[in-house]
Length: 241
Length: 318
Image (tube, rainbow over all chains, first blue to last red; front, top):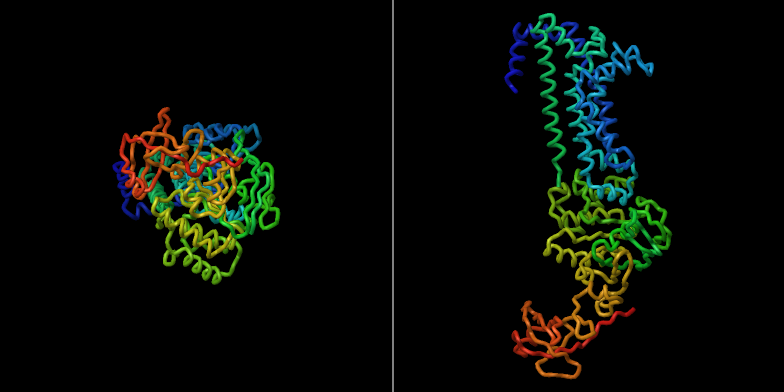
């Protein structure tokens, strides 16, 4: 695990610290990194909401076809990302059957990332919601709480660590996503080129140091997310009975 | 406040949980809903609280029909079987929850919470989390939380069910004293007849969604309304055709009018009492319970022939 990671880190330092800095702060690299982090943030925020909502419906509601919906949630996990990218291009590309063309646009990048990161929050929140003591909600109701108050004061505080953990996982995935993005984004520098595609491009043009430098930025961000997930789990379990 | 439940029915799919139940408890009383698991007693409690909606029937609290009042407006204090502590809140915030919902000023909440924690003997635990409390402490916290909003009635679902035997005994006596202090109309659910007898003034015996008998502890024990009640509230043994409590049998070593001859199979010493396992000439078992003193005077031993006669018969009233 650590060997390839340290190899990348060492490689990124080929030109010394200043070389590293130059590589990541070059206008194209910076633009790609900024775009990656910004879109990832937006996408993860949307999926935090949508994922929590879906988890809620899957746990609390009973409807026909629920099993299917539950299974389909995992599709982005199983689907090769390049296939996902191709599907998105076919559906929302220049020859879109629904006449929505988001190819070569940032919206397209966002759509791809929304697709691949959807399951993370759902799957993080779902088990916690299932385990949640329903009597707690009944107790709050009998003490006079409205449905909204029950959610805000009882349910949300108890599922928040799981939501945050799902967010961290989704974010880690989003910043490194390549396959689903590469086709629909068109990889226009300063417009739709994300960090992973930038890295790919640098390798292609034999600028390994720049590729490694940007990789290290992504790597550090991923490690931070990993730490955040651990912290969220500890925080979530702090008052377990 | 008084509670009147009239012809209440509740089904879950094909299962009839509560099947046309009618009963009333008067203001300030302490009532036990007693029955085996699946008898519908917990469902009935949830129906009174408004946590379930009945398929038919009315629930009247303090003279006002509350059948269609949502649970959050019923002013009913409910203590759940596993106490349902808000595990992400301190004891103080748990107890003050209902008051915060009612937008009571902060300093008043603080004062009231302190008062309640004293009442349930949890002073000094205000800043703890439920995970840092024992079972008995969690239960008392749940009780304080329910009492904080000054409910019209207090409902407790198996309040002692999850506790170990010694804590149970302590809490029973304590609940009894608390009721004398607070005087809020209280109904609690239990499957333990001893608990119901010890704590309640009135017992409602339930079986299969229906009420079998309503009465004082003494009533249901001595004058059971049905075979079911007879067997559920205490031990029953049969002498000939008569059903009798084992301690209502006279045991002697000489024949007497109306006495049945039996042989002692086993003498079981239970501390202050002695249980005799007897068998009649027809091979029917009889169980008798006598004092240790009586057993010593009779010098009872295994294989001995004795004569037993009921001194008080149990008869189903209905």
